[in-house]
Amino acid sequence: MNVTTADDTTSTGQAGPLTGTTDRGTWREFFVEHAIKAAGISMIAIVGLIFFFLLREGLPTLGEVPLGALLGTRWYPIEELYGLIPLVIGSLLVTAGSVLIAVPLGLTTAIYLSEIAPQWQRDILKPLIEVLAGIPSIVLGFLGWVALAPLIQSLGAPTGLTAFTGSLVLAYMALPTIISISEDALYAVPKEYRDGALAIGATQWQAIRMVVLRAASPGLVTAVMLGIGRAIGETMAVMMVTGNAANMPAFGPAILFEPVRTMTATIAAEMGEVSQGSVHYHTLFLIGILLFIITFAINSLAGRLIGGQEQRRKRGQI
Amino acid sequence: MTRQQAQKIAVSAITAAAGLVVLPIVLVIVYIIVMGAGAINWTFLTALPSEGMTEGGIMPAILGTVILTFGTAIVSIPLAIGAAVYLAEYAQDNWLTRAVRLAIVNLAGIPSIVYGLFGLGAFVLFLKLGTSIIAGSLTLGIMTLPVVISTSEEAILAVPQRFRMVSLSLGATKLQTIRHQVLPQALPGILTGMILGLSRAAGETATLLFTVAAFYLPRLPQSLFDQTMALPYHLYVIATQVPNMPLTIQYGTALILLLIVLSLTLVASVVRTRVRRRREW
Image 1 (tube, each protein chain N blue to C red):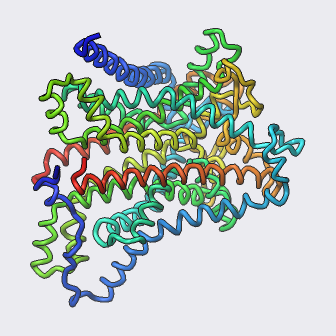
Image 2 (image 1 turned 90 degrees about the vertical axis):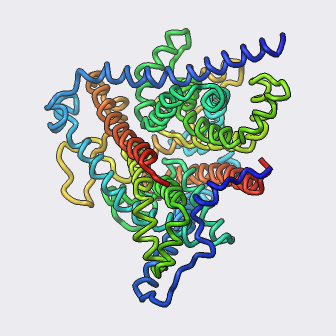
Image 3 (image 1 turned 45 degrees about the horizontal axis):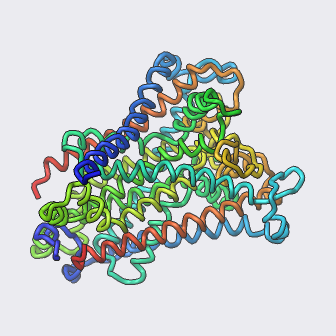
């Protein structure tokens, strides 16, 4: 089915064959056009520079701390113990918890917005979700610290500053990303698909479940991945509410209700106190390299999925 | 269970989930307003902090955030608009363009604390700018690039092709067409992107930690190479690092930060809806 409408062709701005006359192009025009091109290509250089400076400050660790020690289970820089495992587990726990909360909530909210809500509700809800995206992470962290953590403690936990508290705050920070991207994906599913399903007797829920969600699935997966990327890199809110204990959590049913410390929070909390060029300093940069690589992998993969979906849409397959 | 029952249950569950997302947002904002409004008065907004920050105002932090937001704009806007024009008007479908797009997607995903590390390594130490307004603005500016680029590119692409055709057929060069036809039409969309990007920069904390933020600096910055206080970091400091900090001052600071950032978001969203309504094409 070809979903390209007349409207699409008039609104795409890809200049393609229209190149304009260049005979009146002065040296100034030549200069500006090259500056524009340089601005575009500089984005590659910027990513490269970021990685370069992380490597420059972080790689020396590998010569200073044996790999086995980096893979140790104790992070205790005062005694020169630089085991990264508890920090990685801290990040994974908090992120996993937030995904468990944010993905079901986010996807269903997107379904509500795209399939069920009447227009007037959409006009209220979408700006509200933009507002949530706009609330600075430090403000949510502050509320988690002064209001949410005491609340969780009053429910019987030994402390309110736990991985779960972090997950809850993080979930609401990842929600706008998940909702807006998955709503876009749902919105892009042609109306004919729904009409077709309803016409052969499906209920609205059956149409959503069996047709719309499937057609939108690459976009939904992307939404979830970018949400995870957002959660794993979050710093301030997590630092304030997870209790900052760089210990191995005791594995068990209550694992989410123990204090942890994430990779991001470790950098934020300790970089201010280390001397430049020390082993501790280099190791904090090494954590930065790990975060860079993790988010780079997630975003490249998500970018591919989005790209693939756009290709298929252009070919008229969804 | 019949499928009609399933339909009813599913719709109610979906509606309830949407409620679970929306209610806390409203609650958070109302709560901060209620708790923080009491702290806000003229002294709080215009005085220097005193008595170890437990009294006085937060003026240096507000001013620092304003300065950093301007600095961010100066660093990111020219570069971002250049890149957006390149992607929308010049880039061909080849490996280079795909690499540029991949770079932008990844810039958008890099955690803010990693930007902070980069700023520390590159600007504070390597370029020897020290922890300074200029190092902080450069770091925040780079962090803001992807938001501004993607919204601007979208705005440029939304300008109908016939605007370009008419301009070119009248003998304008491609650059003249972009400057006099495409960019003016795309301006509101570009503005929206700029404001959104800046609102994010204004609320950012982790990036500031090692590049610019001063823990306590009861005076105004003297030059671009000076440190400054900033609202988000100040909120962090008074909430977690200062004992016996009056709670109203904490909530008041959170409220001011929220108001600054959300009013920027609101302006962006008003610009966008106005333009959509007025648009004739």
